[in-house]
Image (cartoon, rainbow, N blue to C red):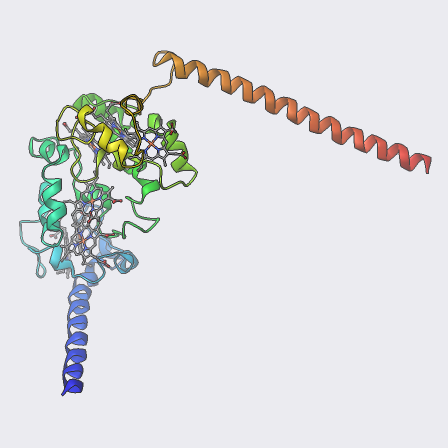
Length: 288
Ligand code: HEC
Ligand code: HEC
Ligand code: HEC
Ligand code: HEC
Ligand code: HEC
Ligand code: HEC
Ligand code: HEC
C-alpha cells in the first residue's frame, strides 16, 4: 500500500513539474527567444527578452510566470498590461504576506502612494526575474551590496533636490568605521539596513523609526551591548569636507600628509638600499 502511495506521489510530482515547465515554456517561446524584437518589430519597450539562464538561476525558478503575472494567460495579452509600479508589492504579497505588511508601513510605500514615483518597490531592491537568496553574494541585498542598492537613489543629486532628502549617504557611510570594515569584508559591521531596517524604513522624525533619537540605544545596542548615551550620539553620516565638520576634516588632512610622507621616505629607503647592495656586489665581483 505504502509503495502505491509513493508511486502515485512520484507520478503526481512529475506531472506537476512538467505542467509547470510547460506553462513557462509557452511564455518563453516568445520571451525567451533572442529574436523577440525581430519577431515583433513594433515593440519598443526594453526588457521583453528574458534570458532562460536568468530564470533558471533565480530563487523563483520553481514558480510559474503566471503566479506573478496573474492577469496573463495567453497571447494576445489583456489590456491591463503594462504593469503599474504600484501594483508590484501586491503581486509579491500572495507569497510574502508578512514582508508586504511591513513594507506598507514604510516611508517608501507611503511616499509612493502620495505620488513620489521615485520611491522603491520590492523589485528596486531585489531585482525582477533574477532574484537571488539573500545569502547569495550576488544578491542586491547581500550585506556588502546593500549600500550600493540604497545609494542608487540616496546618492542621487536629482532625487535629493526633488524630495528634499539629505545627500551623500553613501560617501559618508563609506568613510565611517562601519563602511570601511564592510569594505574589508567584515559582514558583522553595520550596513544601511542594520540601522534603518529593511522593509519598515521610516524617517528619523517618526517616533517608530529605528533612527529616532529615542530608539538609537536599542538600534546600536543590537551590536554594541554596552553603548552609552554618548556613544549612541556619535554621528554616522558625517560630511568630511572643509565646509562640513571641521574636526574630522583636519584629522583627514593630517593623516593624508602624514601617510604620504611616510610612504615616500620608505620607498626612498628601499631604493637606496637596493642601489647600495648592487654597488657592493659590483665592487666585490671586480675585486675577485
Ligand atoms: C516573482 C514574480 C515574477 C515572476 C515569477 C515572473 N515575473 Fe515577469 N515581471 C515581474 C515584475 C515585478 C515585472 C515588472 C518589472 C518592472 O517594471 O520593474 C515583470 C515584467 C515582465 C515583463 C515586461 C518587461 C519588463 O521588464 O517590464 C515580461 C515580458 C515578463 N515579466 C515576462 C515573464 C515571464 C515570461 C516569466 C516566466 C518565465 C516571468 N515574467 C516571471 C515579476 C515576475
Ligand atoms: C506569441 C508570443 C507571446 C507569448 C506566447 C507570450 N507573450 Fe508576453 N508579450 C508578447 C508581446 C509581443 C508583448 C508586447 C506587448 C503586447 O503585445 O501586449 C508581450 C508583453 C508581455 C508583458 C509585458 C506587458 C507590458 O506591456 O508591460 C508581460 C508581463 C508578458 N508579456 C508576460 C507573458 C507571460 C507570463 C506569458 C505566458 C503566459 C507570455 N507573456 C506569453 C508576446 C508573447
Ligand atoms: C528598500 C529596499 C527594499 C524593499 C523596497 C524591499 N526589500 Fe525585501 N529586503 C531588503 C533587504 C536589504 C533584505 C535583507 C535583509 C537581511 O539581510 O536580513 C530583504 C529581505 C527580503 C526577504 C527575505 C528575508 C525576509 O525578511 O523574509 C524577502 C522574502 C523580501 N525581502 C521580499 C520583499 C518583498 C516581497 C518586498 C515588497 C513588498 C520587498 N522585499 C521590498 C530590502 C528591500
Ligand atoms: C507564488 C509564490 C511567490 C511569489 C508570487 C513571489 N515569491 Fe518570492 N519566493 C517564493 C518562494 C517559494 C521562495 C523561497 C524559495 C527557496 O527558498 O528556494 C521565495 C524567495 C524569495 C526571496 C529570497 C528570500 C530569502 O530568504 O533569501 C526574495 C527576496 C523574494 N522571494 C522576493 C519576491 C518578490 C520581490 C516578489 C514579487 C515580485 C516575489 N518574491 C513573489 C515564492 C513567491
Ligand atoms: C528607488 C529609489 C530608492 C531606493 C532603492 C531606496 N530609497 Fe529610501 N527613499 C527614496 C525616496 C524617493 C524617499 C523619499 C520619500 C519621501 O518623499 O518622503 C526615500 C526615503 C528614505 C528615508 C527617509 C528620509 C527622510 O528624510 O524622510 C530613509 C531613512 C531611506 N529612504 C532609507 C533607505 C535605505 C536604507 C534604503 C536601502 C535599504 C533605501 N532607502 C532605498 C528612494 C529610494
Ligand atoms: C550605524 C548606523 C547607520 C548606518 C550604517 C547608516 N545610517 Fe543612515 N542614518 C543613521 C542615523 C542615526 C540617522 C539620523 C541622524 C543623521 O542624519 O545623521 C541617519 C540618517 C539617514 C537618512 C536621513 C533620514 C532622516 O530621516 O533623517 C538617510 C536617507 C539615510 N540615513 C540613508 C542611509 C543609507 C543609504 C545608508 C547606507 C549607505 C545608511 N543610511 C547607513 C544611521 C545609520
Ligand atoms: C549590525 C551590527 C552593528 C550595528 C547595528 C551598529 N554597529 Fe557600530 N560597529 C559594529 C562593528 C562590528 C564594529 C567594529 C568593532 C570592532 O571591530 O571592534 C563597529 C564599530 C563602531 C564604532 C567604532 C569603534 C568603536 O567601538 O568605537 C563606532 C563609533 C560605532 N560602531 C558606532 C555605532 C553607532 C552610533 C551605531 C548606531 C547608530 C552602531 N554603531 C550600530 C557593528 C554595528
